[in-house]
Length: 243
Image 1: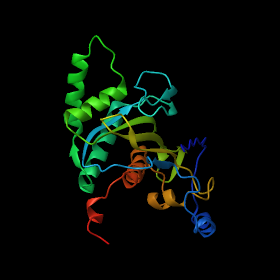
Image 2 (image 1 turned 180 degrees about the vertical axis):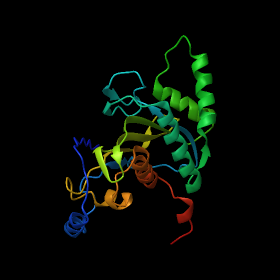
Image 3 (image 1 turned 90 degrees about the vertical axis):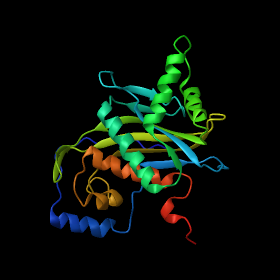
Image 4 (image 1 turned 120 degrees about the vertical axis):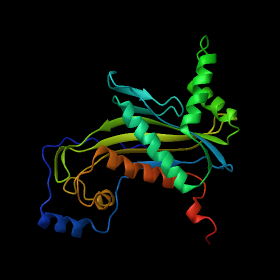
Protein backbone atom coordinates (compact mmCIF):
# COMPACT_ATOMS: atom_id res chain seq x y z
CA UNK A 1 0.00 0.00 0.00
CA UNK A 2 1.35 3.38 -0.97
CA UNK A 3 1.47 6.05 1.70
CA UNK A 4 1.18 9.67 0.62
CA UNK A 5 2.45 12.13 3.19
CA UNK A 6 2.21 15.88 2.74
CA UNK A 7 3.31 18.41 5.34
CA UNK A 8 2.73 22.14 5.48
CA UNK A 9 5.51 23.72 7.54
CA UNK A 10 6.25 27.04 9.15
CA UNK A 11 9.61 26.71 10.94
CA UNK A 12 10.74 23.66 12.86
CA UNK A 13 13.32 23.16 15.55
CA UNK A 14 13.94 20.88 18.51
CA UNK A 15 15.12 22.06 21.88
CA UNK A 16 17.31 19.65 23.78
CA UNK A 17 14.74 19.29 26.56
CA UNK A 18 11.91 18.62 24.10
CA UNK A 19 14.06 16.13 22.26
CA UNK A 20 14.75 14.05 25.34
CA UNK A 21 11.07 14.16 26.30
CA UNK A 22 10.00 12.88 22.91
CA UNK A 23 12.68 10.21 22.88
CA UNK A 24 11.29 8.93 26.16
CA UNK A 25 7.75 8.85 24.80
CA UNK A 26 8.54 7.38 21.40
CA UNK A 27 11.61 5.31 22.18
CA UNK A 28 9.87 1.95 21.84
CA UNK A 29 8.27 2.67 18.46
CA UNK A 30 9.36 2.65 14.83
CA UNK A 31 7.49 4.36 11.95
CA UNK A 32 3.83 3.53 12.51
CA UNK A 33 2.96 3.95 8.84
CA UNK A 34 6.00 2.88 6.78
CA UNK A 35 6.73 5.08 3.77
CA UNK A 36 8.09 2.12 1.82
CA UNK A 37 6.51 -1.14 0.72
CA UNK A 38 7.37 -4.25 -1.31
CA UNK A 39 5.19 -6.76 -3.12
CA UNK A 40 5.98 -10.26 -4.36
CA UNK A 41 4.02 -12.77 -6.45
CA UNK A 42 2.97 -16.00 -4.65
CA UNK A 43 5.83 -17.95 -6.24
CA UNK A 44 9.03 -16.14 -7.18
CA UNK A 45 11.30 -17.82 -9.78
CA UNK A 46 15.09 -17.84 -9.53
CA UNK A 47 16.73 -14.64 -10.74
CA UNK A 48 20.35 -14.59 -11.89
CA UNK A 49 20.84 -11.83 -14.49
CA UNK A 50 19.12 -8.44 -14.27
CA UNK A 51 19.13 -5.51 -16.67
CA UNK A 52 19.16 -2.27 -14.68
CA UNK A 53 17.35 0.32 -16.78
CA UNK A 54 17.30 2.69 -13.81
CA UNK A 55 14.95 5.56 -13.05
CA UNK A 56 13.02 7.94 -15.25
CA UNK A 57 11.00 11.04 -14.38
CA UNK A 58 7.24 10.51 -14.36
CA UNK A 59 6.96 14.20 -15.32
CA UNK A 60 9.86 16.14 -16.84
CA UNK A 61 10.81 19.72 -16.05
CA UNK A 62 8.56 22.24 -17.73
CA UNK A 63 5.44 20.07 -17.49
CA UNK A 64 2.63 20.66 -15.04
CA UNK A 65 2.00 18.53 -11.97
CA UNK A 66 -0.71 15.94 -12.47
CA UNK A 67 -1.90 12.44 -11.63
CA UNK A 68 0.31 9.96 -13.49
CA UNK A 69 -0.21 6.25 -14.11
CA UNK A 70 2.87 4.03 -13.95
CA UNK A 71 3.05 2.44 -17.44
CA UNK A 72 4.43 -0.80 -16.01
CA UNK A 73 2.32 -1.45 -12.90
CA UNK A 74 -0.72 0.76 -13.51
CA UNK A 75 -0.34 2.41 -10.09
CA UNK A 76 -1.24 6.11 -9.99
CA UNK A 77 0.73 8.87 -8.26
CA UNK A 78 0.22 12.60 -7.94
CA UNK A 79 3.45 13.71 -9.62
CA UNK A 80 5.59 16.81 -9.96
CA UNK A 81 8.32 17.73 -12.48
CA UNK A 82 11.65 16.08 -11.66
CA UNK A 83 15.02 17.33 -13.03
CA UNK A 84 17.09 14.94 -15.14
CA UNK A 85 20.14 15.36 -12.91
CA UNK A 86 18.07 13.95 -10.04
CA UNK A 87 17.02 10.97 -12.17
CA UNK A 88 20.64 10.29 -13.13
CA UNK A 89 21.79 10.59 -9.51
CA UNK A 90 19.17 8.10 -8.32
CA UNK A 91 20.07 5.65 -11.09
CA UNK A 92 23.82 5.88 -10.45
CA UNK A 93 23.37 5.67 -6.69
CA UNK A 94 21.18 2.61 -6.81
CA UNK A 95 23.33 0.84 -9.38
CA UNK A 96 26.39 1.33 -7.15
CA UNK A 97 24.42 -0.15 -4.24
CA UNK A 98 23.46 -3.16 -6.38
CA UNK A 99 27.08 -3.70 -7.40
CA UNK A 100 28.19 -3.81 -3.76
CA UNK A 101 25.24 -6.04 -2.90
CA UNK A 102 26.36 -8.68 -5.46
CA UNK A 103 22.93 -10.28 -5.48
CA UNK A 104 22.72 -10.69 -9.27
CA UNK A 105 24.76 -10.50 -12.45
CA UNK A 106 24.00 -6.95 -13.62
CA UNK A 107 23.64 -5.33 -17.03
CA UNK A 108 24.36 -1.61 -16.40
CA UNK A 109 22.05 1.29 -17.30
CA UNK A 110 24.39 2.51 -20.05
CA UNK A 111 24.07 -0.74 -21.99
CA UNK A 112 20.32 -0.83 -21.43
CA UNK A 113 20.03 2.74 -22.71
CA UNK A 114 21.80 1.74 -25.93
CA UNK A 115 19.34 -1.09 -26.57
CA UNK A 116 16.38 1.20 -25.84
CA UNK A 117 17.71 3.68 -28.41
CA UNK A 118 18.02 0.89 -30.98
CA UNK A 119 14.46 -0.28 -30.34
CA UNK A 120 13.13 3.28 -30.62
CA UNK A 121 15.02 3.79 -33.89
CA UNK A 122 13.48 0.66 -35.41
CA UNK A 123 10.02 1.56 -34.09
CA UNK A 124 9.55 4.96 -35.71
CA UNK A 125 6.28 4.06 -37.42
CA UNK A 126 4.84 1.86 -34.65
CA UNK A 127 4.13 3.00 -31.09
CA UNK A 128 5.61 0.28 -28.90
CA UNK A 129 4.10 -0.01 -25.42
CA UNK A 130 6.42 0.67 -22.45
CA UNK A 131 6.02 -2.82 -21.00
CA UNK A 132 6.79 -4.44 -24.36
CA UNK A 133 9.90 -2.31 -24.68
CA UNK A 134 11.08 -3.43 -21.24
CA UNK A 135 10.50 -7.04 -22.27
CA UNK A 136 12.47 -6.54 -25.49
CA UNK A 137 15.36 -4.97 -23.58
CA UNK A 138 15.50 -7.93 -21.21
CA UNK A 139 15.29 -10.48 -24.03
CA UNK A 140 18.11 -8.79 -25.93
CA UNK A 141 20.45 -9.58 -23.01
CA UNK A 142 18.96 -13.00 -22.21
CA UNK A 143 18.19 -11.64 -18.73
CA UNK A 144 15.86 -13.10 -16.13
CA UNK A 145 14.48 -9.69 -15.17
CA UNK A 146 14.59 -5.95 -15.86
CA UNK A 147 14.69 -3.37 -13.04
CA UNK A 148 13.07 -0.02 -13.82
CA UNK A 149 11.95 2.87 -11.62
CA UNK A 150 9.95 6.09 -11.80
CA UNK A 151 10.43 9.30 -9.81
CA UNK A 152 7.22 11.13 -8.90
CA UNK A 153 8.29 13.86 -6.49
CA UNK A 154 11.53 15.58 -5.55
CA UNK A 155 11.13 18.53 -3.19
CA UNK A 156 14.27 20.06 -1.75
CA UNK A 157 14.57 21.13 1.87
CA UNK A 158 14.12 24.85 2.50
CA UNK A 159 16.25 25.69 5.51
CA UNK A 160 19.16 24.05 7.28
CA UNK A 161 19.87 20.79 9.07
CA UNK A 162 18.65 22.42 12.29
CA UNK A 163 15.49 24.20 11.19
CA UNK A 164 13.35 24.26 8.04
CA UNK A 165 10.54 26.21 6.45
CA UNK A 166 9.80 23.22 4.24
CA UNK A 167 11.18 19.67 4.71
CA UNK A 168 12.54 17.43 1.96
CA UNK A 169 9.99 15.20 0.25
CA UNK A 170 10.57 12.40 -2.28
CA UNK A 171 8.57 9.67 -3.98
CA UNK A 172 9.81 6.94 -6.33
CA UNK A 173 9.28 3.27 -7.07
CA UNK A 174 10.99 0.25 -8.63
CA UNK A 175 9.60 -2.69 -10.59
CA UNK A 176 11.26 -5.99 -11.47
CA UNK A 177 9.81 -7.28 -14.76
CA UNK A 178 10.14 -10.74 -16.32
CA UNK A 179 10.97 -10.35 -20.04
CA UNK A 180 9.28 -13.57 -21.21
CA UNK A 181 5.73 -12.53 -20.31
CA UNK A 182 5.91 -9.06 -18.74
CA UNK A 183 5.01 -10.35 -15.27
CA UNK A 184 5.86 -8.06 -12.33
CA UNK A 185 8.12 -10.24 -10.16
CA UNK A 186 8.53 -7.57 -7.49
CA UNK A 187 7.68 -3.95 -6.93
CA UNK A 188 8.49 -1.50 -4.18
CA UNK A 189 7.92 2.17 -3.50
CA UNK A 190 9.20 4.90 -1.22
CA UNK A 191 7.05 7.96 -0.56
CA UNK A 192 8.33 10.17 2.23
CA UNK A 193 8.14 13.69 3.59
CA UNK A 194 10.34 14.16 6.64
CA UNK A 195 8.43 15.19 9.72
CA UNK A 196 9.46 16.19 13.20
CA UNK A 197 8.81 14.13 16.30
CA UNK A 198 6.47 16.92 17.39
CA UNK A 199 4.22 16.09 14.40
CA UNK A 200 4.56 12.34 14.48
CA UNK A 201 5.94 10.45 17.48
CA UNK A 202 6.35 7.35 15.30
CA UNK A 203 9.04 8.91 13.09
CA UNK A 204 11.77 7.38 15.25
CA UNK A 205 13.42 5.31 12.48
CA UNK A 206 13.91 8.30 10.22
CA UNK A 207 14.85 10.48 13.20
CA UNK A 208 17.65 8.09 14.19
CA UNK A 209 18.88 7.79 10.59
CA UNK A 210 19.04 11.57 10.28
CA UNK A 211 20.87 12.04 13.58
CA UNK A 212 18.04 14.31 14.69
CA UNK A 213 18.62 16.72 11.80
CA UNK A 214 16.59 17.81 8.79
CA UNK A 215 17.72 15.90 5.71
CA UNK A 216 18.26 17.08 2.17
CA UNK A 217 16.24 15.41 -0.59
CA UNK A 218 19.25 13.27 -1.54
CA UNK A 219 19.80 12.17 2.05
CA UNK A 220 16.12 11.27 2.43
CA UNK A 221 16.18 9.43 -0.91
CA UNK A 222 19.28 7.53 0.20
CA UNK A 223 17.29 6.05 3.09
CA UNK A 224 14.58 5.06 0.62
CA UNK A 225 17.03 3.37 -1.73
CA UNK A 226 18.43 1.35 1.18
CA UNK A 227 14.93 0.19 2.11
CA UNK A 228 14.09 -0.81 -1.45
CA UNK A 229 17.40 -2.65 -1.77
CA UNK A 230 16.63 -4.58 1.41
CA UNK A 231 13.23 -5.56 0.01
CA UNK A 232 14.50 -6.95 -3.30
CA UNK A 233 14.22 -10.72 -3.87
CA UNK A 234 17.32 -12.89 -3.77
CA UNK A 235 20.19 -13.16 -1.33
CA UNK A 236 22.85 -10.43 -1.08
CA UNK A 237 26.49 -11.48 -1.13
CA UNK A 238 27.17 -10.78 2.55
CA UNK A 239 24.36 -13.14 3.54
CA UNK A 240 25.33 -16.05 1.30
CA UNK A 241 26.76 -19.07 3.00
CA UNK A 242 25.40 -18.11 6.43
CA UNK A 243 23.15 -20.38 8.42
